[in-house]
Image 1: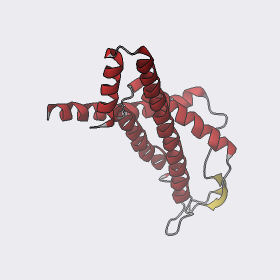
Image 2 (image 1 turned 90 degrees about the vertical axis):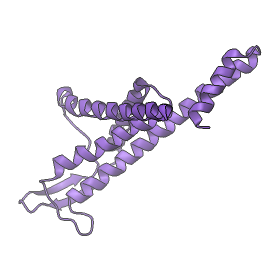
Image 3 (image 1 turned 60 degrees about the vertical axis):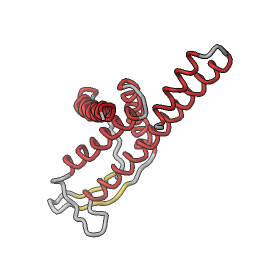
Image 4 (image 1 turned 180 degrees about the vertical axis):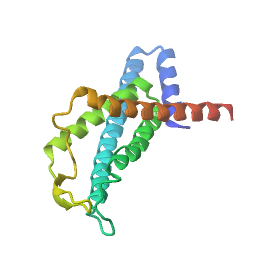
Length: 179
């Protein structure tokens, strides 16, 4: 029995039982369990995305053994790998029984937590690029002085990636029901 089937069974039992006290306690337990699960997923996603950002920047800045500092891959690497994580978040939350709106709330919460972490933690490193640019860069950059319209494209791309993850989870659920 999957966790979703157990939750559905308990919810159906709580709806059909005559004991209102037990029914209320069961519903309360299921809601609390869902919030704890959503919190754990959101915090885990925030930690994973923060670690990914630090790792990608360390590679771009040539700080890891066997890597060279380069400006060419900086823009590409910041988004593509992160979108896979965002799609995974949508997939995971949908498979755990959350709606697309709840998955979006988890994404926005994780992005907000990530920006707070980026502002609180400074990991400055001295980097010299082969292209002649050198300076001090932060491994966990915080966007400063960025207009809201400049954040619209990355936010839209994250929402699209999240939607793809939700859609993949729903497609898989439909296929499993047919089998």
